[in-house]
Image (tube, rainbow, N blue to C red; front, side, top):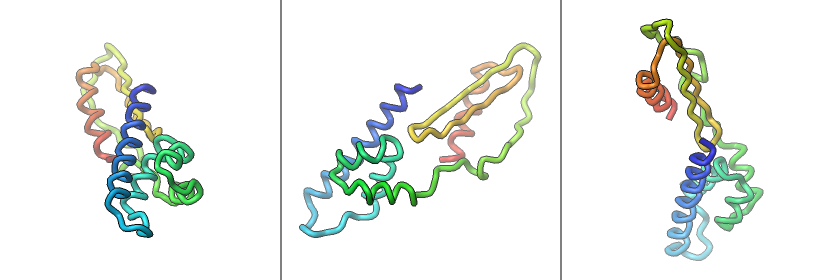
Length: 131
């Protein structure tokens, strides 16, 4: 899972680098960085760290750090409240499914009497609700 997270973080940073490179290639000198690009930089900093992103995108470290601190946290829908889902159970087994994104957001579902084949579509649905 950690390797997948590092690939995702690398992809986020590469995407931000492409956006900045494109903008810098066509901007007028002295033009301020658009908010959408700062948002992309903040997402990359959330995934890769402020120092790495500031260096890669040639940005002011302290401004990026401030924007990251002010950015809203990615929270699950409903503020992280508990939701109980009725599930047809059999006493045969326990199944745990855990997902984690590059920002460290984690979803863990534990069910009694469920097979992984039954749990995967449920986890996908729950994960997509917070996105």
